[in-house]
Structures are given as C-alpha cells and as structure tokens.
Length: 289
Ligand code: PAF
Picture 1 (spheres, rainbow, N blue to C red):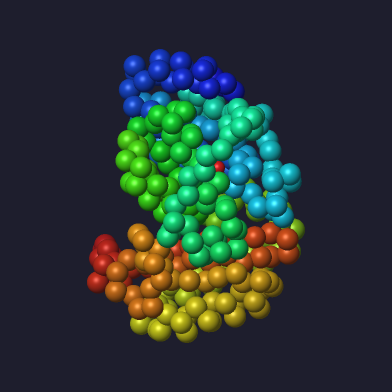
Picture 2: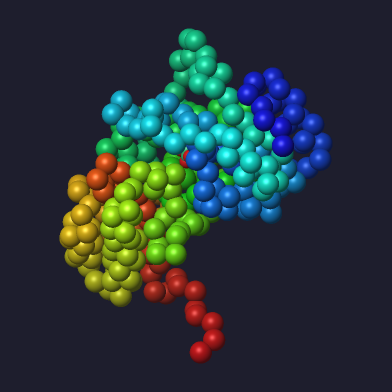
C-alpha cells in the first residue's frame, strides 16, 4: 500500500492503478473500526483497487466541537488498511486540502437541513465540500459510505446527482457491537457506565420502529422512544424523527420506506443512529417456517 500526502503523487498513482481496473474510494476520518473495514470489504467486491482516505476535516467541525480531541491513529489505521488490501492510503494534511486562499464551499440545501444539520450548522457544507474534493482528487468509479451517517449519505447522493458527478455512491449497512450499539470512532469517549447506558439508543429505536410498523401512531412511538432515552441518561435527546428514506422529508404515517433517525448526548458524547422502517407490505417475506 502506498501512503500518499501530495496531490500530484496521488494523481499519478491513481492513473497507474486505473490501467488495472475500477477504483473504489473509502473516505474516512481515521480512527478506523470494523465499520470502516466493512466499507473496505464491500469496496473490494466492487472494484479492482481500493483507495482509502484519512483526513480529519476541519471544515465539518463547529467551533465547540471535538476537532482537537478527535481520535487520530494514523499508524494503526495504515496497518489495518494495508492488511485489508488497500492499494493507496490518501492522507493529505489540512494545508494540502485547503491551501492559502481557499474559498469554495459546496452547499446542498434541503437534505442538509434539520436533523443533525439543525444542531451542527455548516457541518454538511464541510462534508459536501471535502467529499467533492476527494471525488475530484481520486476520481473513483465507486465510493462507499456507512448508513450510520444516514443524513450524510443522503447529502452526498443529492450532491452527486445535482453535479452529475460520474461516481456510483453505495451505502453500506451500519456495523454494530453485539449489544446493538452502532460502531463509531466517537464511542471511545464513553465511560464504562455510559457504554452500558448507550445500548438504550439502538433498543429504543428498534422498539419504536417495530411499534410504527405495527400501526402505532408515529408521534406516540417517538414520544415513547424519547422517554426511554431520557430514562437511560441521554440528555438532551436532540431528535428522534421518522423521515422518508430517500428525500429525508418528514413522514407522519408510514406508507413508503422510511428511516427512523436519532441523535442524543450521553455525558459529553453525541451519539447518532438510525433504522429502516418498511411498511408491512414492502417487507421481505420471511423464509422457511
Ligand atoms: O463520515 C466521515 O468519516 C466523514 O464525514 C467523511 C465522509 C470522511 C468526510 O470527512
């Protein structure tokens, strides 16, 4: 695996790879875990070569967010990516990504608003901007993102369609610990006690999703989920909302594929999670029995 930090070197290494087939990109901010490695594994199924990027993108952190404390583990990230068979680790520094005089922002309206966009103003502009730059630097055929950051995935899909970017965007299902907690680089911030309490998030979402599927009014199911999260120690519960799975428009009754999304704080850690909610008639028939 080549570790590359300069754009010219990246372009020539990618050009050589491209002669050998399709290129997949896995964009990350490092502190890699099994969720990222599932993206790499899916990337390998879809392309001949995998480029992974590790860049902690200052443009997507608000002034009071955890940019300075965000976990950075480049050496172990590089080892994991190499073992997984990545061809290139693209790890530019901030001055390479945003050189002196940098002045361009990509802003995706609609899907960026509400949910995480409400409490993290500018966050999705920062994400869209750096992802557009990564697309232009690597020019991948296919790019993979985790569904855990579901709104991010929707923003990137919208941007890719709107700007006619020639790349296939693939969402990969959220990877979870055995107790259901979604894997996240920020889980390292949780104390042992908080880590146990955090199980309430996937559990409350799962129960609310089931209740909605069973015909309980959406508002009621969400109110119950919020109460369960509060009782488990989440404070504040920023949002629990049912949205259209594609457009992210609010959904008040389940008639098409939807997504139940939540964000809540446990101590100093902000956790997010989401689950698909299909109307009964759209569910896959269960096999056997
Ligand atoms: O999901 C992430 O790790 C980041 O938001 C991304 C997509 C790498 C952009 O910085």
